[in-house]
Image (tube, rainbow, N blue to C red):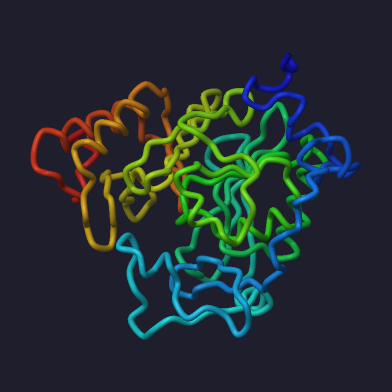
Length: 324
């Protein structure tokens, strides 16, 4: 039987908050089946390297990889002057970290400067079972990690870490290593991109990560691409299912959807219908991509966008919000 404090998908047998350490940041290695698995530790402890073009981290034997699989994929751009990779120590020297409250209460945004890779953001969401991390910053400095540990101790731990797809992973491997969340969740269709970290809970089409916080697979951009719906706050953490164009003062002015942004490859009609079936029934008044949170983009806007894209030939061009 599931605990009333934990969603049915994550019960006390595998409750991400059940075995937290005293400071609320990690798991006690003891009672759970996961923690006593005799086959843990079979993977070699290889160094991590980040692509300077997109920020994707790979674990690779020294002296490091020659190619970034994310940049070599049609959904991202190749580096104009060839591939370059940095180690974790080099990344730490390149960036400074920051965090700030997101535009919606109960969510904190973590990021780095100057721009590194795709310049993703890590969203940390307060829930009934502790903090849930969704997407990750390109790197976490010592100050950022200290702040996460402070927040975890204050808010009930850091039991869950998840991501929409590979363009939002950032330094997810680093947070798994440093904070030891019990649940690390990516959709089962996208495991091919997770070589740098260990997925502990491969998600199917729908998974409740915390009360009021549910992961839904939309597919499209990637087969396992998933969105996270915060029903209490009315936020859709939309991954790359949507591209939001902003005005100079940060207001949303246009929306688009794409299979590959740089190449401007649109989603197929079948992919759009699958996305509409999932997102169209979710109630939200703000969206959060891996790069920004934007209040004012609503369920109706997204439904009208997809319906418009279904009414003609596939198109990846932005549609003015005023027309939606």
